[in-house]
Every structure is written in C-alpha cells, then in structure tokens.
Length: 460
Ligand code: 4AD
Ligand code: MG
Image (cartoon, rainbow, N blue to C red):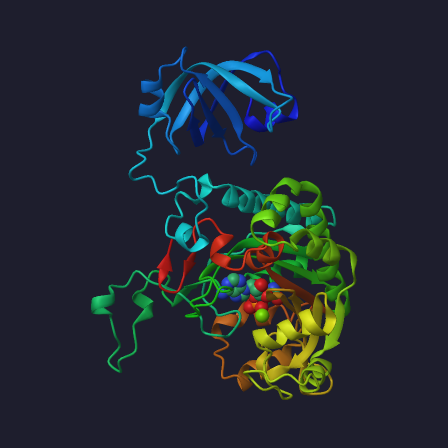
C-alpha cells in the first residue's frame, strides 16, 4: 500500500490502490463528492472522487467529515486539466474513526497558532505542524550526520544530576521525600541523607560538565538531549524543557570552536534548504515571506565576529535609545542582540570575550583579568542560538573562580579532578534546538517548534 508521498513520487496511473489517511476537507456537488486525504507522508493531499452513483450521498454525509480516518480503494486517474495531477476514483471505503463535526476543533479555515497551542494533541493534523516537525526531524538527522562524519562520539549524559552546571540556580529539584513532612535535622536543615540518592538531586540544565569529562578521554564528543530550566520567563524564547546539542572538544581553543560553530550552523542550514524544500515553501507562503531568502543568506555569508568590548562600543555609538542602557559590564539584552544582528551586521554575529562577572564559572579566564573566553552566536529574529566557551583547564584558577562565586565545591569533585590528571585546553558550545528551529521555520514562539511544550505555568 503506497503512502501519498510515494504516489506523488511515481504515480501508478490506472492501478487499483488502497490508501489510508485523514480527511482534510470534503466538498459535495450534486453528483460527486471530492475529498482531500492526507496521511502525513507529505504536505500534499490526495484528491478522492466519490461518485454518488457508486457510493450513496447519505453514507458520505454521515461519515466523511474533516478529521475522520478512512481506508479507500480506487483507481488512480491522471487529470492533466485539473490543478492536481491525478485523483483516486473511489470504488469503496471504510471508516476507521469518525470525527464529529460539531466538536472537532480543526475545520477548514486557518487557525491561529495561539489557538493551536491549546490543542497540542491535534496540532500534528495541520500542515503547519507537519512541516515544522518534519524540519525538526531532518535537523536532528543533519546534526548527527555533521558530527558523525567528523569523528565526534555521541555520548549520553545523565538527566539526573547533583550539580548546577550553569550556576544560575534555575534547577528543578527531584525528590522522593514527602513534601508535606520533610525530615529535618535539629537545626532545621532538610535531612537529604534520607532522600532517594542520599543527597539533593536535580534535572540537568546542561550535559556539559559530564561532556567535558568524556572529551578528556574520547577527544571529540557531542550530546543531544533534553535539558531543563526552571526559568520563570514568560517569553517566546524560553522553555522549561528544551533540547540542546553540546559538542566538547579536547585541544580546541576559542577560535577553533567559533569556526566549528559557524561551519556547523551553515551545514545545517544548507541541509534543510536542500532536503526540506516543500516544507520551507509552505512556511514561507503562510508565515514568513523572507524565510528562504534568509536561510540562503546565512548559508553563504561569513558571520561577523565582534569582541564584547567592540559590541558595547557599537551599541553606545548607535544613537538608539534602548530600554536597557549599555555600559561595559552589562549583559546584552534581546534588544541589543537584535540591533547588532539586524541593523549593524545584517547577518549572524558572534560576540566573544565577555566580562567574567556575567558568564558561567567554568569559562577560561583571559590574561586581561576581566574577561573570559566565552562566545555567543546571535541570529536574525531570535538572538542567541549558541552559547559556548573555552573551558578553564587550570585547577587552581577554576577552584579560585568557584570560591569567588561562593560555590560549594563538593558536587564538583570529579569535574575538578579532571584538571588534576592530564588536563588539556578544551572547548565546547551548546546549540538550543528550538531556538535554531525558530530561524529555520520562520516561527516566532518556541512553543510552536516542539511537539508538547513545557514552560512556566504551562504544560501542553
Ligand atoms: O547559553 P547556555 O545556557 O549554555 C549552556 O548551557 C552551556 N553549558 C553550553 C555549552 O557550552 N556546552 O545555553 C545554550 C543554548 C542557548 O544559546 C539557547 O539557544 C538555548 O541553549 N537555551 C534555551 N532554549 C530554550 N529555552 C531555554 N530556557 C533556553 N536556555 C538556553
Ligand atoms: Mg547563554
């Protein structure tokens, strides 16, 4: 039994076929009914023609509603003078599952993305989400392809962790202690030795720390997995559960890593342009007119690199009145990132060498004493897609940095230990899958590029 994609790829004209799918629309005239059938294999629908002589109008009207699932048998006929190249002349059909038109929420008209967010279980029935989830799948494949072809080892880092990689305290705590009756020490502290792991545990905010340990034996590794942040941010760019790709490379310095990040993003953009044309055309037509043009531009032009100090200088001289004023030492806000990318450069920008105070504890300290070898890749429309750095490989410096931050070194013993035995310069970065998908699909909210979103106050 061919899928609709296979029928379009090589139409078996004149043959009797069985096809299964969901009804996108039905239109009934006096003598015939036309049904558009979709099966998820392509965004294209297959036109079915049901003659009322062969199949009674009563039966059609009782069953063939938008959203219902059917199997049909019929002959594939070429239709050179119609908009679609062929159609199925239906002999018979069976109904798998009905869809009551008085309650089924998806009708022929276009629905807003906000409305569709409330029915995430039915979003896969729409072409918009079929296009997005196909691109998400193709992107995941291309990510593995890129690293596998370049000698990187795919590693699985744990989801349950004892430590806060980013030091931002945005952790979901995991416990089997009874919350209404927490065991406590006489001084009031919670008795974590009674908890499942005998110590506090959290959902990971990043696989980087374990990734570094693995790269110190395997050389070049990458992770690709779910990541959790209890950020109470109600923005279109933040999820509580998102997917991150984190390569980590022994013997790489900051420049090599920025080169890798740029090459990686260009490879992925080209792969989507080549392999997902149908989806991109659909999204361009319905959501973002400049989509394909923007992807082509990013695939071809070099990214602009600016040190943080240069970036601040450019922002100060921009003549713009930003909501958050800029001065050396302040973090770049979304409005600053967008100015740098969209107005100043007109293409992706890599900002590097940030003030150490606004970046994570593990980043390598530069000789100037005030910056670290960090970088962010900023993209049009979305801002930061990648954050990365060269890592502090010097034991003493790392320990001092953690002390300065008031961090408890206990959960980081193994992380520190790899600095004591054969430590080497090494670097890596993290790509936020959903952030990058915003760029590739033309969507503007990360909730629309992951099948079931989790964000503060919301679980789809
Ligand atoms: O900049 P971040 O926090 O860096 C890290 O986690 C490092 N450990 C990565 C590394 O060097 N191995 O996060 C990396 C990327 C961001 O640039 C962004 O694209 C994405 O992850 N990201 C989020 N995406 C969706 N929702 C959130 N709440 C995100 N937080 C970060
Ligand atoms: Mg970051």
